[in-house]
Length: 473
Image (cartoon, rainbow, N blue to C red):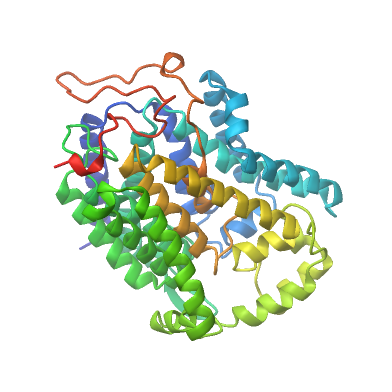
């Protein structure tokens, strides 16, 4: 097929998807285009790279070298998101009080700028990192947050996945690249791991959408017909196989296991048992790891070396180079220090390829403890949600361990990061923060019989009544 014809067919397919979704999707605002744009750029290429596809510079390098275009775009998105939040009346005091660990993390990050060797650079990167929180709150403060999250992930799939197929098959100069002289398929992204991450996020959504459908007209996660879901899952499977991103593959398997186990009748009748089983499984895996080194077996199963392609030696070197083990070098600044530059030249990297080590280098043990506290607090919030909005809670329960696993070999706790963003979606507690009296009611299309949304004081993520999942047919 000629590339021009393939491009026309892609455009027709894309328009069809958005037109169908527009007819089916009730209760979301135009403000969702802000986090969607953010997530698309984070999962593909920054604007400066879209305008200069011939450059070999990756997105991180482009941003760090000070692309004025990227600074303007991300600053504009953050400002637009903040304006949306300002217009939506909600209890800021309650938001802060119910998410203490998150507040403590960003407060410590701000304080760390005081000992950063380059305070201005740390400050700019902190604003960029906090943009992920703003985007998450734009979705979670929607009249129907549960529907909004699904809508953004679905539209991200519409934009990124077919375009990746188009680039790989018909425009190899855009969809393929080389890494250390080895060819790789990148699709809309600049690296195979970024393409794998997009497949991971959209794969979680489509798997969850297939498994969790109550017997009401307003389907969980937004109304998508089965053929569309199957088409996109097939597309994700193909892209994951050629991208060969082991981290994304393992993380997706973890998420699918959580979603599938949560679908079992035993847990739908006794929801909190799912949380207990998850905790016991984590402890059991930890014991097996110390006894039989199952991590090494998993690494070999996905076709990687036990030392994770030299990452383990690099991690040992970086641990020894940490400037301050207690409070770190300052927010997202380690690679600008003398030790960081030396490590970058020695290992030819710009990140630690481990989110926890990266955080340790920037914010020390204090930062790691605060992050762990936030994740644990979010998990206990999910445990409470399991007895109410079961399907939404299971999605959150799948998201949190996925991000935890993903950051074992990739660093996504800083910068413009979709993994950082969805972690916020998983651990934030907005119960009672937003009242429907302060948010415009979702408009319904003529003839729609969607169930009215309940007060977000009781149910911040779901759009239908709190009916036990076991009763859904």
